[in-house]
Length: 215
Image (cartoon, rainbow, N blue to C red; front, side):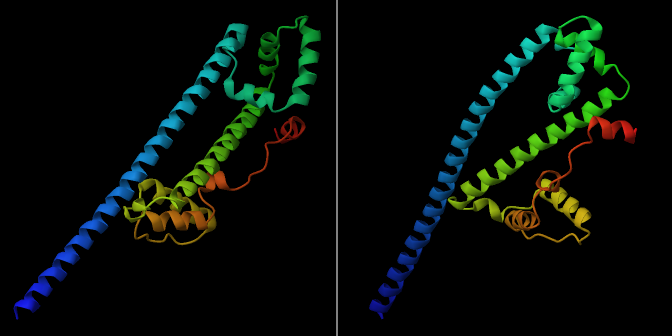
């Protein structure tokens, strides 16, 4: 009887020790995930700081050259239409008698329809830049998730995930599903092409000739 009791006690102690070991391993894995995420966050912040410095430097130079009052979105649209830009620049330089680019841009942006047309191209450039960033962030997250303990997957579904799922359902004409956790929502969104704002192709804006006929 005493031997049976001792055996049972030893078995219970082993179970307790195994449970404690599993819990410790889970905590270590979660801590490793957090440290990895922290390092990734630090690297991302450093990269963004360097990128921001480049933007401020270039922006400061352009403002100094007289570009400060030019609509930034339209200016980006202008840079995406090099052939039209070149033709207009040469024409305006001859008619205005100046080679100052900022002055010339101010001049032809004042022409009817030009500002609106170029802003459409500028907004399209912003969209495509965000689409590239979105795909890169998804890829980076998937690569990290492949080597992590995936503790996040059991968490509650986020409001952002719900909003993306609702938009996908609206675009595709399907019923809104219910998700048991964050991981299930992530998988469903990924299987349905991701955030439809950035994951699906859309046509380029019209050319200047097309725009004139549309207007």
